[in-house]
Each structure stands twice: as structure tokens, then as C-alpha cells.
Length: 335
Length: 86
Image (cartoon, rainbow over all chains, first blue to last red):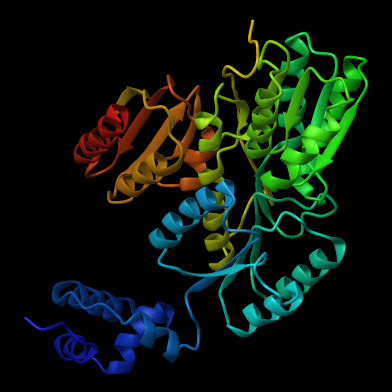
């Protein structure tokens, strides 16, 4: 049997084409009995409205823009899995914008996204400045496009909803774990570039360190392995260290590799911990102790929150925080 | 109708396993809930389920109330069993 068309539905339900269309797209404009009859016929005939045609006719796409800083980061890739699965459930297509490989300024990319008439925006860039946040607010308020910050947070405002974990608390807990290992010279290895979530991890680290009356030691390096390897070699020549909390797994593993090349034993000489629990944590030897961030879940919940906003449903909490946990492996002593 | 389940897969009810469970629950008309430590959420809500943070070793209760509750619980049990084997 050939595919059922809107003409078949209209004929079988004894209504006009316009009524079929309204029953699907604006059900409140059709009498309930008529609507029920049309929907029953649609089901019987297996009619599927064409998504492209639907978008064209109503001048509304069913598309969300996902803005990511860098697709090659393990956390971003896993987050995309969660986003894509939920987008599929709610029948949204994804338009992907990757900032790191763009010569164009972010503001121009955002303008392009607004012009593309997307229904919503998931913003995964965790380097948000005040200026950027203001621009995002403008998109939300003037252009009425719902936005959700996913795995990033803007501490100054919750006008744009966000989904993340409590990074400050996680930073506190992982640092406390190293203090319990009997470590006194614990470094937080963070990034030179200012990422909002890394600032929160640092705040948690500082709270644990000051509670234990230790000296805070923050080293800032690059997320790029080729650069931070060299930096670690240089920096730790004349800095005493017995504990490392790195803001990303990849940075922690990079540090462990440098330690190994210098015949320093992990965890006997230095306890090392990271953030995220990506596959790098499992692939490293020793396997890496880290904060497990439910990154797929953050993506999934971010996308779900956005679908609620796009459907103008009420949301109870603008700042959604998911649970994290500590995963203890062989890069710490764990007595 | 309700049933207890011990969650034994490494990820707990997170990520794809959670999405699979919620998608299955949405195929039924019954009201379906998931309870962990006296906190009950709608099993048809991805945000509710993921907010529970169900880890490996958790004991959860799934309850279905409605016209297709028996079938729903059977099918959900199948999903949980597949997930636990992985």
C-alpha cells in the first residue's frame, strides 16, 4: 500500500484539508468530536505528517541549536549522547555549532543561530563572560528563544536555567579525600583560561584546604597535553608536591605520565585525582580516582529542560543540580 | 501492582539505561513510579529519574497503577534484567 497522504485522511474523515491540519497543529481550534475522528483516521491509515512540510507551512522548525566549545573533549562528546537521545524522543533535530574551530566571533554565530529560527538553544560553552551572558539574555528576552546552560553555570544570575552538578561541593570532597590520604602539599591544577565550572572547583578546593589549615596551591596550565606535559616538567622541578587535584581527567593523567617518566610513584609519592570519570580515567595506569560527573545525564536533563521551556511548561527550579560521586581507584591511597 | 529490583549494572540507572527505562514506561497508559529510599518519582520523566542518582547496588521499587499495569511491569522487568546483565 502506498503511503497515506493528508488527502486520504481528509477523505476518510469527511473533513477539509485545513481541518486535518488544524486537528494536528492547532487542536484547540477544532471541535473535540471532529478532532477525535481525524486522529482515529490518522492512526488507522498510518498517516505521518512530513516534518519538512510542517516546518515550511508553520514557518517554524523543530530544531535546537547546540553550541559547544570543542567537540574533541571527552565530556562534550558524552554530553552530546544524552542530548541526542532526548532530542530524538521529543522529535527535535540538532544544529551543531563548534566555537573552537570558528574564526567568527561568538556573537556573530549567535546572530546566525537566531536567524536560523531555531526553537531553542543549548549552550555548553563553559567560558561565559558577563558580556556573553548579557548577549544570551538578549536572545532569550528579545527574540524569545529559550536557552539552557548545560554543564556550565553563571554564578551571577539564574535568569537562564542551567543543569550541572554542585562543582564547589565536588571540589571540596575530592580535596578532603586527598587530605585524608595524609597529603599536605596538595595542588589544584586548573586551567589558565577562565572556565566558570573550574572556578567553582577551585572554590571547593580552597574551602577544604583552609579547613585543614593547609596552604592553598593553585597551578594553572593548558588543557592541551603537549603544552601541559612540558609545563609540569618545568614547574614541579622546584615545587614540593604530594597531592594533585586536576580539573579534568585528561590533565590528571597527563600529570601521572610526567611523574612516571621522572620515576615518581603514584600513589606512594603523590596522590592524584581528577574530574569527570571519562574513559581516560579507566585507561590510565594506575587507574584514576575522580569525581564522577553524570555527564550523559546532564546533557539529557538539559535537553529535557529545554523541551519544557519550548512548550512553555512551568519549570520548578532554574538551577538543576544532579548528584555526583567519588570513584576511588589506585591513584590515591584509600586507607 | 509493584515490584522491587536490585540494580546491578555498573552505571546504575543513569545515561542510556535510564533513557531506555523511561522510554519503555512511556509506552503504557498506567501511572508508573520509581521509588528509591522513600523518594518517589514519575518513571515517565527523564528529569525525575535522573535526579534520583541511582547507583549500582540500589534497591528500587517500580509501581504501576492503571489498565495495563501488569503488562507494563512485565516489560519494565525485561528492561531492568537486560540492563543488569550488561
